Length: 172
Image (cartoon, rainbow, N blue to C red):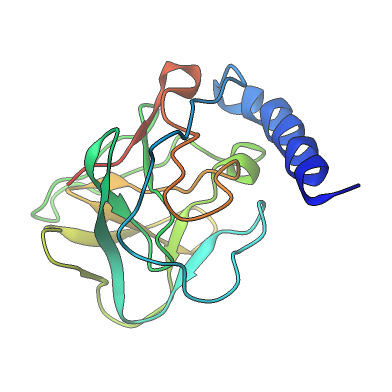
């Protein structure tokens, strides 16, 4: 199977898995989607969470459809989930994730393994983490947990926006 056939097969698998977390399996067009940051290193697998080093955890990129969006260090789009509970910026309440189990296969949590707190790039305020039930630290912006979408194959794609009416491209 060629590269194009492999991508479509993965899209079908992602669509099936998406139904496990409120998704409809629909994808949006990536026409005109462009990130200003470039990918650094190999892309993680669809099922793997993105684990960040102790450097900048979240940056911004320009997208022709959405304007300024949040991206991970490789330039991949980040998303918010309506099923999450946001924490506050003061540490009085922690965020919680509504995406667990099979949902994480389609929507890998953005994890942080460094010491202290992650750093936001220019234009990104209130970057922090909260502890997931498995003990990992998920990155948040303004108290909202961040995820990647397994159906985004390269920097600049925003295929996860609007899935199930509950997943949205993260904006600063």
